[in-house]
Image 1 (cartoon, helix red, strand yellow):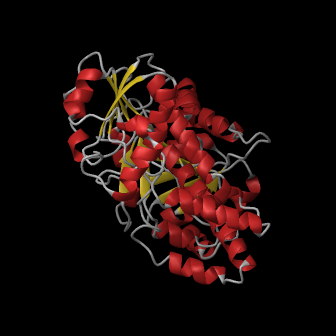
Image 2: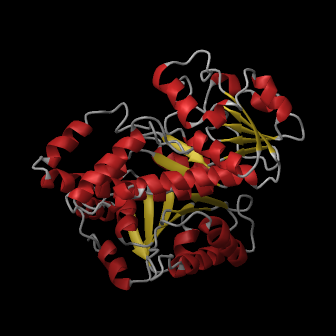
Image 3: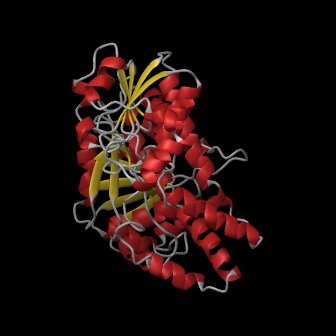
Length: 437
């Protein structure tokens, strides 16, 4: 393909060199004449392993050139990759000056072009930037409609400095956020030989993926450092601990626990977080990340309560209130916190959980119900149908299989508050509302 790349900084230079190496004809565009001259001389404008040789060979073989002319680049390419900077401002927001300017210039060039052109944002931008800035600017400057007269995609990069070329050819995933299928198809041809999952989605999701990745990486660094600080104070080798931790690919390094939903509970997680943060405090070790876990969990409980109460209905039914489906354990169940709050506010509650019945449970769980939450035991019913008859608001508190078809059973005047995502649907205000979706 004929490709123009706007911005010859880190991402732009690596993308230009690698795409040219793959056999595409690439035109690099930058207002900085020095960068343009370096490319045309076969010299990389950045310091990065392997890219210098790739750029040199691509220029020598006639597949890579550079210019300061936006119009020339757009007229001589089918697809434009926007790789300009989005630096932070003092308040944390992004400076989109370069993005707006290049979109104005690309849009003006598209106005003079008869063929279909695809504009791809590779720059890291917050969700909503494509919708609120990129697309309106391109449309205003071109006088054409995105998704109809020209294409727009978001294509986040996952390049690490120092290993960017390797990361380009061996990415963990390739994500394409598309406004229309035609644009996505054209962009996807750049990655046909990549040995990585190709994920095509909407533009806003693609924007959010990049931030989710990077914030997760930052969180992992901070978490490992806090564990390491505690270990050092206890005379333990933190690297040995984390090496063993990383052997667990079933729970620790996996998708497990990484689905948005309700708060955690049970007999282990809350207790162990409290214990470790207490130990850190006795060692005079500050652990702001670990200390934020339980308050963050409590905020999710409060979010659930707000979702239930903001409907202004008094009759509430709870489906599932053990901390996890398939168990009768109520210890530190976040749904029990919700129930107690609603009782305190005078709501009319009925509760159903087939695993939690006084007739069948024994031992510590029976003692917990009778001695710690007897007021809750009086609200328990034996059939789900009693909940559906009683409630104006039905709350799904755990993921038991019998709750999955609840939406087919509710009346038109009932609303379901889903804390566990019983299905794959998104919220429908007034009928079905998910806590994180």
